[in-house]
Length: 218
Image (cartoon, rainbow, N blue to C red):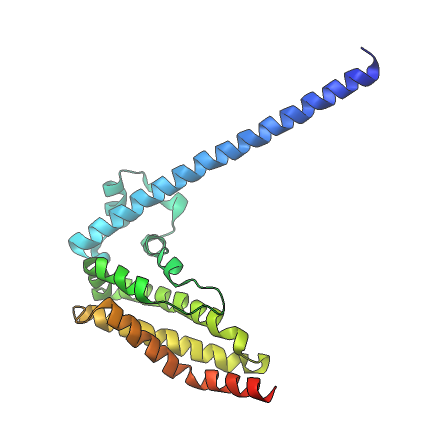
């Protein structure tokens, strides 16, 4: 075997080794990701069960790790406090609101989810700390969704006012949702989704009218 052939063979082996190491790293990351998700689900499930038993404010981190059967260091490897754990536990709500710009906002899946989780939601809203965490998170999620829906229609110079309107609309929607829960969900999720969209349209009516007027002038 000449030097050229030997060099080529070594390069092929090196490339093969690199590919094997890269594949091994990807497999390791996937295993690690699954472990992380499993641990987070254990902690989230433990928190939910404890909230249903005695309310959010009465649940301690020690309660959570005892119920999840994990160590304290494991908890703090994932979360700084139980507020972060609570936020992770309902982060899936964000997916219920996500819509591409131009597509209508559909609140019905969210209201149906609230109806299914009524007891947990009622417990969260009945405690001062968890009520603050939950409503702030929902307002943030809704404000982002509303901005994505209406922002393409707004002129750049109206950005500040538009953001204020989006913030107000999100706060109004969350207040409507929480009142519905507090009053025992007296009407259907379908009716509440309709009422919420009507409220949103009223709050943002001036923005839509202004955008329509600019379009006609153009």
